[in-house]
Image (cartoon, rainbow over all chains, first blue to last red; front, side, top):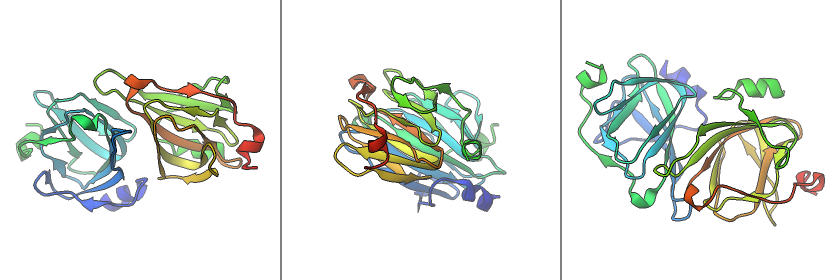
Length: 135
Length: 135
C-alpha cells in the first residue's frame, strides 16, 4: 500500500527524517527553504503506515494539506483526528501536537510553516504506541 | 481535457473568480481564510484552458504549488515559464506577475499568501492576448 500511495504524490521522495524526532520511516522533501521576505518554509512529508512525528509545537504555527493516504492529527488533550486527501489543518502557534500515518495506510501532506522569524519547531517527547493507538 | 484535469484536483471546485481580475473561467476555493496568528491565506485555484489572472503583486509575497494540468507564470520583463504538476514558484513581495492555464490544458495550483499583515494583493492591468501568447 505504501508504494501505491507514494505514486499518487505530487513530488519526488525526499530525505529520510531524523529518527530523533520521528517514529517509523518518514521522508521530507523541502519545497521552499525560507528567506526573510517570504518568511515561510514549505515541505512535502511522506509517512509510511504506522509512522509519526514526536509531539512538537511551532512558534509561528503550521498549516497541513493532506494529499494522499490516510493520517492522524492530534492536539494535546484532544482526541486524534482522522485525515483524508484534501483535508486542511490549521495549527496555531504554540499548540502541542503530532501527525502521522494510520496503521494501515501511508500518508502524505504538504506542511506550510509561516512566520519563520518566530522559529520553526520545538521538538518534545516521542508519541508512545498507546498515544498513537488513541488509548 | 478540462473535466479530466479537474477530477485530478485535491479539493472541490470553489467560487467563480471575479471577471474584473481574471480573463476566462477561473474558480477559487478558500482553504485557509487567514487570521492574525497564522498570518497566511491559502486557496486552491482552477483555471480553464486559456484563463489567467491580471498582472498583480502581493505585498507579503506568494508561493504557488502546481497540482494538475499545465500553466504559465510570468514576471514583468521576463519570459513566461511553463509550469507542470509538482512545480513550486516563489514570488517575492512586490514582484509584478501573472499566472494561468496554457491554451490547451486546464491548470490547478495551490496559492499560499504569507505575511498577510502587509496586505494580500494589488491588482493591475489585464494580461492581453499578445502577452498571454508570449509575443
